[in-house]
Image 1 (cartoon, one colour):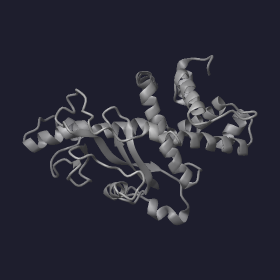
Image 2 (cartoon, rainbow, N blue to C red; image 1 turned 90 degrees about the horizontal axis):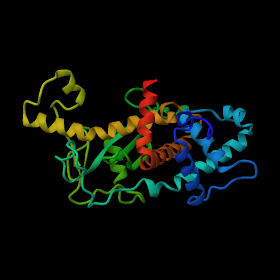
Image 3 (cartoon, rainbow, N blue to C red; image 1 turned 60 degrees about the vertical axis):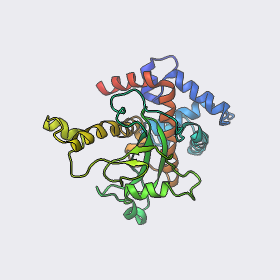
Image 4 (cartoon, one colour; image 1 turned 180 degrees about the vertical axis):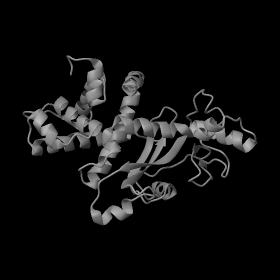
Length: 299
C-alpha cells in the first residue's frame, strides 16, 4: 500500500498513507499499543480498519494475512481498546465560550453549540433480545444519540440503547447526573433538535405542523410565506449538519451499515471507536478526506 497509489490506500483502509502512519504513531506513543513478536502495530491497525471499513470477516483476514483466528481476534481487541482509550481526547463537549462560525446557516443562532439527533445502527443480537432492539421500521438496531458541532465532528455519543427506545428517552438517560459521562448543556447555550424532542432550556426545536424538511422546500419551490416557515427553513439548514455527519460516518465505515458477527457489547464498543476515527479523520485530513470522498462517490 505504501508503494501504491494514494487512492488505493484510502479505498482499502479509509485513510490516506500519511494519516494511517499518524494513527499508528499515536496509538503506539499515546495509547501504548506495541508490536508483538510476529505482528507489527501497522499490521494490527490495518486489520482493524479492514474490519470496520469494509465489514470483512476474520476468517477472510486469516487467509489474507496468514494468521490464526485467535491471533486476529486478539489483535483486533487490542487495537479497539487502545482507540477507545483516546475517546476523551477526540470526543468531548465544547467550551461554553465557543461562538458559531461566520456562516449564513448559523448566524441566526448565536448561542448554539451544535445539533443533536438519534441514529439507528444495525446490530446483531440473540433472538430473545430482538424484540427490544426492533425499531419502528422493523430493523434490529441500536439507537445512538449523536451530538455534533458545526465542523461535522462528534462531541458526545451514546450508542447502547435498544432500537425500540425513543430519541427523547435516550437523551434523558444521557443527561442523568448520576452518569459519569453525563451530557450537560451550559447555561445560556442550546443545541438544535428536531420535532422529536421537547423545546425547552438547552434545546431549540422547530415549529410543529409547519413545513420543515429541506426536501419539502425543494419539491415545492416556494419561498417561506409566514414567519414560522422562515424560522423552520433556517433551523433546518443549520440542523442538517447532524444528518450530514451521520451520512458521512456510515458511508465511510461499512461496519455501521450491516449486522456484524460480534457480541453486542463489542458492537457498541466498535461504534464508539468509529466515532473516534471519524473525529481523527476530520482533525487531520478533512481536506484530503473530502476530495477522496467525492472521487469515491463518482465511481
